[in-house]
Length: 249
Image (cartoon, rainbow, N blue to C red):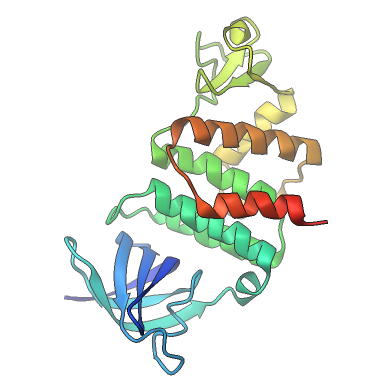
């Protein structure tokens, strides 16, 4: 049966001389693989919709146990400013590769679809990409099955007072329990609240948040350590993004 789904191209891999295998995260079917035949040809009707980051309408015969074939595609947003800016490309590629890494095929999640679409739009508009990426990383911990404890002490359950963050204990530790991890990340009350906000906030409201440079650095190291410990992911886009941060003036 021919279906029409909204989707985002989160990966595009050449196949043969003219074809592209697309990984598309759709609103209704989740992550699916589509064969776009002839899409590498500039004259192909699939050329535009097969670009990385393309948001469009994808027509295909859905096959839950094998790759589907793209029958028709219509671009709704091309994110041109993202694709032609190396820094924006690096940020968007990381978001898409992380989504690909933590999701399984054919599991629909309209909330994840909305999250990534909103984040790509914010990146294109020039919003603070570092904060956007930290929000995505936090929200995707739930999808990956590695959500940290952010509401109370991961050890004793205490909900009030000052907290640090322990990668080893997978969440916040209160003042009393902080002794259990010598490598904990010390947090100010505002940083504790920021972590909670980034996890729980509706993505469309993120543009209202402003974060100090030193806090961005802290969150980057905290979540990098957390993902390295629990996710098992090795992302090419992450390596490039880290190198880019070192290269740029």
